[in-house]
Image (cartoon, rainbow, N blue to C red; front, side, top):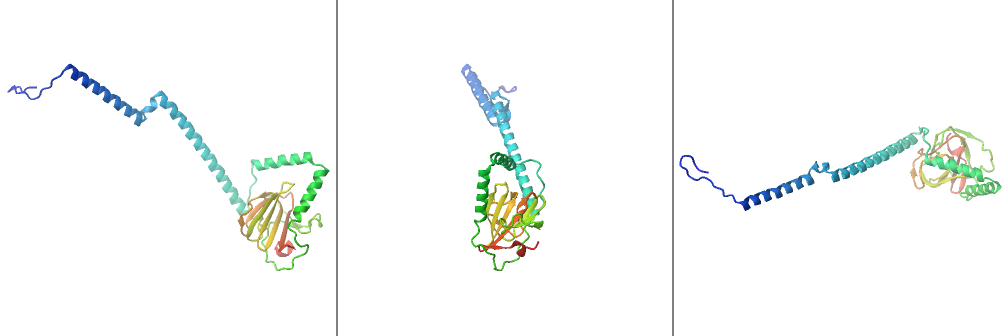
Length: 259
């Protein structure tokens, strides 16, 4: 490059064949590096056949995970709603039969098919043993017992077999009626009976309360409960039986509970 007036040289560049080849090769290498970085660190890689398949698989996995989390949240919300209704004493009948209910029906069908004189005798012996397990002294307690909370809303009825149920007070209830703890204590036993109902035993120190024919328990063994707190429900098909024991001696529930 020369000035047009003085013809003085301003800049010069000497180009050779090897130099041109070197410049072209360097440019080609830089282009490859730039394209590789563009593919590796930008979403442009998703247009390539190999990357698009992996992205689709990742999207499917994330969608399944979101659906699973949403299902878990729905079940958790339904569980909390049931707990709130149970605590408030306003329980609605479920429209979907639970797995536990299906197992009860299957168990009842099997017991009905296998029912005979031998099983009836075993059932009678088992119930007699369980009934007398808490019996330490066959007498009526004369100790002072505080006034207890009413365990359920219903009508006190005469037991059909006074000799067999002489330690229990039967209460006829409506369907889906909550069963409440008579006083503060702890759940020590939740046991399923042969008639597919549950027996709950609560320790109140020194009192012990027993609830028979509970349809659906709401607590597990070891749980602490307050007076008037719901521990289960009844369906109204069987009379709820209440037993109160004081230091191994029977206490008449009708005298210590205000119905």
